[in-house]
Image 1: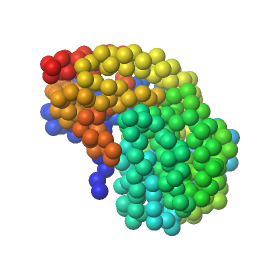
Image 2: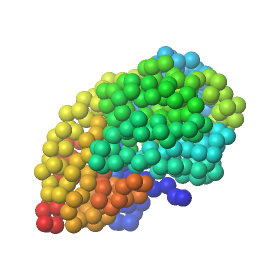
Image 3: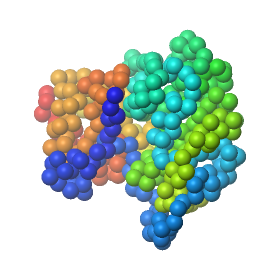
Length: 356
């Protein structure tokens, strides 16, 4: 099984024979504002640190994260992006089964496959607005399985109320829940970090999306001390490079105003973009909450053709037919600055109009 991702801007630019600056990338779900202010300068001023080994276990970084969210340092692990933990978790448990709330991020299934864990699909449906039906999910849980939930979900952008999810996890103590909050900072919904950690929860917290640093590779895994022990005992040394550790500490201590600015911008722009998308012929918008929007094509055009026509205009969107549970009628766009959003909407309007 192969991972398929958006945001391959370097390879796309190479294929088209253009520069990355010529492309408008709405296929990846990063902050529309670029990296947080002050981070570049902080990294440059500490560049000499790459001459030394970083802290083997990112101890200072984990302590800063723990202090920020009212945790104990031994309840936090830092890694080379949350991807490191996504692939480590299925291996760490002696379980034969995982339940994937699909459609969702494909690497959950890839990680299970690599670990020899059989994965089963729990499908969300367009008819239900891709909302999670907890009662139906409960009937699929038998105990001992891993349950992967992305909140808000990628690619649907649908948000589960945190308190409701927390209650459900506590009501299912025999199942192990892996909750990915990579996109939650783009919303005003509180994090599971703000509540008592259930014994059966492993929480993934990404730095890539909200801070605009996917190339720095930094993510966190949060769980009760006894649960993290199985990882910390086998955690490879120097798993987080010096620049990521320094940058992570800076962001945790200084980037809250930036996060609030991004969040306010998404709350303002998302309804405007949705309204414009709803005016397009044969386009249905899936209601969501994050910094990206899933759309369904109801006419003759399919997402691969639309993506190719957009690419001719140097605009990258995500064809979603690689997501389990979706087909070639679905595409996803992320929110950019106002000029980028207008450029995308104008291109979509022209292409969809020509297809009538």
